[in-house]
Length: 330
Image (cartoon, rainbow, N blue to C red; front, side, top):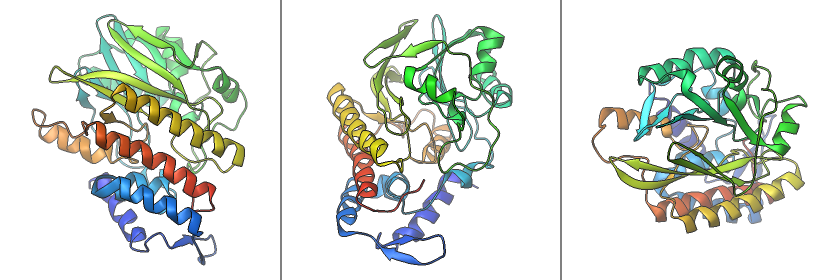
């Protein structure tokens, strides 16, 4: 079964309601406030057919909590998304390996040390990569489903782990379970290592990763700009680092401000690829299926600058909808 299709069907059923109701725990429903509906409608207009049934539906809370639907799904096949850029994650959360001439950069590290062995290491080996060559792990935020195997890599291979100072503080204080996630066992956080700072660039073997601090989902979430190539052609990938609008009003305000700032920075930089660190959010699982089936065809992750700008707008509009009393998936 294609996981992306399951998400589409669930979201489509709820979208048939037109966003007019917010589901309640007792099965009742209440009307969406008009102010919130304005932002939901804007998000849906930005989404179009491409993201209406995935990103917009999930971020605007129209399809309910999604993490648990994918927690026990089959592990997707490791996939080369771009030249020397690989998906080695699970269905609920991603891990991304970038091969450089001086070693490997890993973005996020799944849930547990076991994931490190059974998913990340196994995925790297499929592409002929040596896990011992992982020089850096960049953790987008301090939830257990993103740093899970980082400690394992640090201890076994001496891999450096990078996270914002604020989220190094967060991981030292449980709980580390993200809001809306199913009960799960996460491995202990890694020992504090490198601090990611706003505007810094991590460079290794000719590969740069630009870091933008985007607090809100957590106190120190970071988002990333990553130059990539597709069949030798240059593109710019933007990864929003903290999916999920927080319930806390102060953090939600930071989330909105961060989403607007990152949208401005990434669009000005020329981003034409978006990639979520939770693959079900943007239907990456289905796009990976398509890419494996047609590896020399048009890359489904390259959406163009205009479409990327619209995608970035969905994140902001859905957050504003939640702030105005709209539904939340968390």
